[in-house]
Image (cartoon, each protein chain N blue to C red):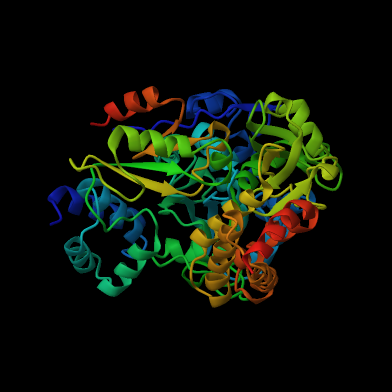
Length: 425
Length: 154
């Protein structure tokens, strides 16, 4: 290695010591350290299993995607296996959701956990060529992964005839260049193929027609990092972690106005209140909470702090992102920042999202600056209503979600602003 | 335009993926890293080397935010202005950079050393407000500390 960029100094704590066993320390665990902790034993065990048994085991474990949508991993794998080889496995490491920094932790500090998960998954899926697509903003992660792959090759965990099982696998690392949309799985595949990161129309789904037209499984970093844990514990043991319906360890990136921001590994029956007060130390100067944003997707009010951090209501089980806003923060202004994010990140492929996201930000900007007229408000209500049902991909589908929720849950804050608009008639 | 070093890097990317298309994004990263930006002539040469139409490459370069066809700069300062950094006062970072280097987002210092770039979430939100200088991520602590960090890159 000629040089390694510095890694983020993110605080991490764990109750479970599974995903963050090594990543809680602020340094990269090399292969020696990983092996000392019993690393790659799950791979040895898996290579002695029938690939279909691994798929069954993952399916029975109830593992669901940790990238946002929360699709059951075992089911996705089974869909893919219905289609003929060659198949591809792609790890989605394009974590770009505002307030989300959990995958970064695994990539930068415990890359071998991810690699082991990928090798086992590739074996189960009959894949011989796998990719990790990492966002351009994580250069350290890119070099760390490439280095870790070399380490794993030297030990015979990657390459030809892995551990004398006759199974071959190479993992390639592709790099993005600053586009949130590339976290959308079909846009990601286009990006690997050296194209603009535009989403593809679904169906066909990537498990049918994916990378270079072949069946492809796209899984998130944290999802794949759960695979060695499932193999080690067995699906029954894995289901003992946390609640029955949503088992397994979960990473929660907590940021905003809290005393101890960082990544917390907890079971999914933890409530939002516990995450903020028990783990993240409460709010800065104990100012009362105003709202919690889950990434740029959901807006929760103080009445919803007892929401469990699972997939049921707000999909915290997906990315698990918690951004805390206090009474000192202006909710309308925060909504403008979210609108600005979508305006910046809409890919321009479909018209409702391209125009709608721009319009939404433009109107909210006027509102924040007290330059709005009643027509501005009418426009905002119109545009937030129509981006979602008319857009091609998930980005357009959620572009107005948080803003609409905020308008419903904080009517008085918006009404105060709207009152001022009548002065401009 | 493309030095031997860059050509070698491109060749290595093609060999790594076994595919010219898959090597495109990393090749563009290599060009920007070596030249400090992506000039038009470089794209023509790249199109020739990778056998990919120039219009396709230009479309790709325009799409990805990190690829910079503008003015050349030795180092790039990426300052996050997404929701979390904004809540934790990212404007202080912009102000500090402006005071130290006299540049606003999108501008390059007169000596061509630094370019200031405003970006969306850098994914280190517990450290907010954060900024990146080339490949390194930092928490913004104070103007003095920023000055020390930037001095390392000169």
